[in-house]
Length: 600
Image 1 (cartoon, rainbow, N blue to C red):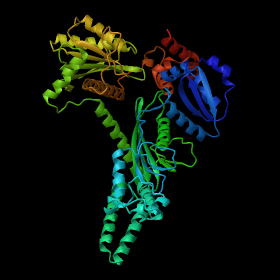
Image 2 (cartoon, rainbow, N blue to C red; image 1 turned 30 degrees about the vertical axis):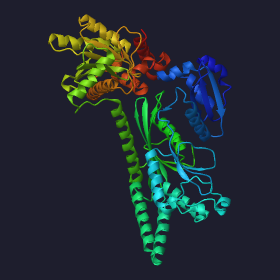
Image 3 (cartoon, rainbow, N blue to C red; image 1 turned 135 degrees about the vertical axis):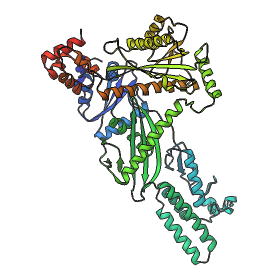
Image 4 (cartoon, rainbow, N blue to C red; image 1 turned 90 degrees about the vertical axis):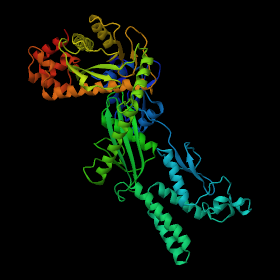
């Protein structure tokens, strides 16, 4: 849908709060958004020049727009999250971990049973949770069984059946794990009191249970029933031990939700701690994928809504690392500066960092400390997967780096026997290429690297990885051809997002199994060249050794260049500006010079 086509329908869009849905040519839902004013928000997509390529691509695909008007911004917020979770539109934030979680169910029946389930039915039963770990649920059920006797049988314990004497107590009764309601040895009121104690345990509210057990222990002791008093004492110790393991900071903190976020490119990681009565009763970390370069505040807001919905949180206090908009007047957003709440936030941040590092370790292959045999096995597997003539005991990988479309540099890392050979790492300042040209830059640095190895009569690698795909691979092959090295080493291109491998001249890519040792090693090498290149780039920027491309334009001084960069953030964005936008910022004469430079 073009801007002119949109203008024909703009007046029909309501100004009420609500949600809007974008559809493509196949009538598929590709984006859902919320707005205080639908007309103002939707119009913004068609009335400005997008510097974000993905947002521009989204607008190009829109063929139909639908709206749902709601009463308030809060209703729009809740409806947006519900629709995203249900339809998972292509351009919305994507929750990567959308698995089902286990519940503890208190069955709606006489003398309710309690057990684990993953299916939450609308049957009138009470579902406690969900919980993030099946092991944790089983541990809880076992803990409850040891402290609060409940039935585990499936008998239909109606009042009529019990009065008729249809049932007899089983071994669980004789073991002390059940009080025998099947024979009328336990009243329904006493049984339900035990269920209430279980709910208190799961909510971290152990005070009433401990008080009740202490009173029973005292009563048994006064009645000279010392064996029963000793059993109650052990239960009290068990509960206090459980409480000590659960309480993290303070028993007086009350009920609240803690959230922290770690953003890494298009991926974001959010940790959630559910606090009830000063006790951490739930903890979970999720991974999200962004598509439109959404800011941290928006991603965190989305994650909070999803997690609070999933875990049925009713907390009226949310602790976060920075201010966010949360359209619910009953919820207070707190950014702690110190004290126990700050400690809990730091605990959440530790968890989210640990989660990211663990994911990274699972994705890449660490061969340091492994035996020669184990290293060779991985290299033989890579040789087989890539159909190489020999095992790639020497691998090199190239990557280009620039900052917001300016200051290009390149980096190369070297792996020998599957582990980094850091003395062979190299940085490259681009010498012959003007401006940003990834293809020509790749050709230059590949040529320089292997020209030097030839001149110094050093060993060539068996495998060279070009991080960037078909375009960069093609230009790298030009350098190899000019050096007469065709057939003496294998070059492959690695697509940045899809982890596909391309061989020179092939139209189809090669996709290695996601968890294969070969792909894990390739990921490790790619991540290492990214780290090495970015560190080099950051150091050069901090030393001020880069010269702004705008400053190379004759007639444009440093002050004008700095002003443009301060406003528009990058040279790439400045290249996309219209002449009118430049005039508004730096005046007619200088705008003409800049515009002519980028639009020759």
